[in-house]
Amino acid sequence: MFKVKDNFLSKEEFNKLYNYIFNVDNQFPWFWYDAKEPIKNYKSDLTQYQFCHMFYNLEVSQSSFYYVINDLLKKLRFKYLIRAKINLNPYSEKLSEGHFHIDVPNCLTAIFYLNTNNGYTLFENNKKINSKKNRLVVFDSNLKHKGTNTTNKKFRSVINLNYVV
Image (cartoon, rainbow, N blue to C red; front, side, top):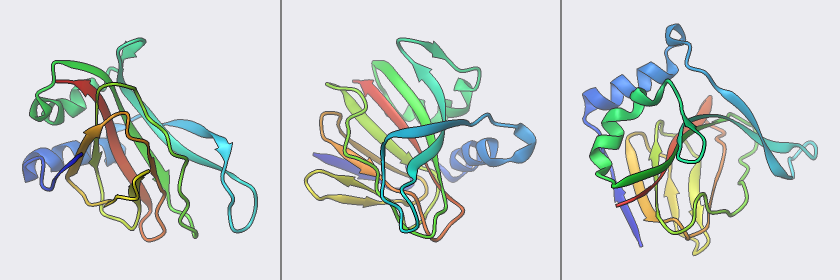
């Protein structure tokens, strides 16, 4: 049901990807995304939010930053890419889970973790995958999952990929 691969990219490939995205000089563009459903916060009824960048969406377009994930895509060996997106959930004092969802039906989903933190991905069967840098988890896209923010790092960031082999 799950395939988990640690150290998915070589150290050189991982550092190149990470540094390109998180080096201020590169001015990687992030976009605000507000969750559709409210999440109870310990202080108020805030909506869970994140920053995203859509590298590729089969139905819409390809970002000019698509090349940044080339090494990651090469190792997946897919036939058709449907969607590739990066998410960044900022630090919070309270760990919050999103809502169970599927990204795209009837394909494979891969989550690539960009940093180690106390956040995780939780599946509806209660399987939990901890956020660990350079880890890839692959699963049937029809399996509902949800992510979290982090309380022990500045952010939690993952690249989410949907594809057909």
